[in-house]
Length: 80
Image (tube, rainbow, N blue to C red; front, side, top):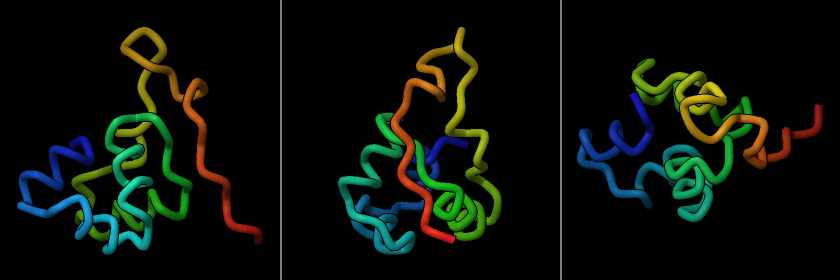
């Protein structure tokens, strides 16, 4: 399920969902529109808080079905 679909189906505002993930509303909006891809850490949080309804592969489309994942600008990973 796409992130925006899930959020709307649950009756959550962009602000509330962003807060749950610990990201800004702007980042949340960019994740929903595909302008940015969430970091793996955020993807894991999304999977957990949506009980698996939103999966990491929901953010990575095949090149012939739309904007390819490699064309997106990923968020930087936290330093290990």
